[in-house]
Length: 220
Figure 1 (cartoon, rainbow, N blue to C red):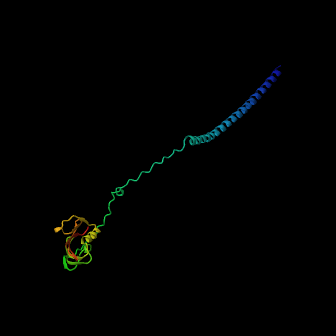
Figure 2 (cartoon, rainbow, N blue to C red; figure 1 turned 60 degrees about the horizontal axis):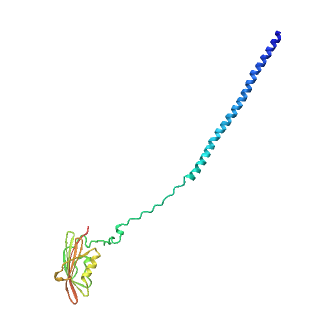
Figure 3 (cartoon, rainbow, N blue to C red; figure 1 turned 180 degrees about the vertical axis):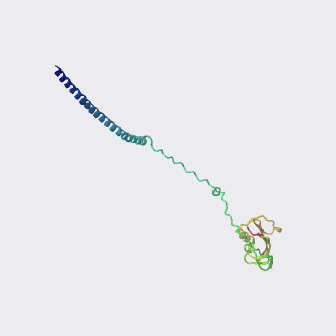
């Protein structure tokens, strides 16, 4: 009896040992397989989802922008009209001014008087009309000022006043009102502080006698 019981106990011990070492290994293999598959599927799903979300996000974003956010239309503003200047308005345009050129220059001629011809240093702008016979001419300088005098006669037909009016207008002289002696034809021209006076003293059948007196200055 004791041997049988001993044999049963040994057999039970062997079965218990086999069960202890074999059953936990099976459970560990099955659990590790399940866990590995789950983690792999989870990692694959996680690694795939960002790309899908990014692509879907970009696609949906571009579609919404093209449909809901159209390009704003630019409004063309009218160009501002150019402001007319005073010089361009009718009636306000300034007349072209004649460039003023000095009729005399330094050094001024010495004081002199000459009969029968124009004296040395006589200003060219004050030359008398053609076919003029000079009686007396003179020049007198004083500190940048030259006084010019002339008495002469020109053969008819000659318009003495018109000659000097036209000639001196080219140099910027303007005619001013003058008072003549005994209603004799006279002309007075001025440019700044410069003056030229011409008076017809006698009108004959063949000639016209006249006199000229002028004060000219050197321009700065």
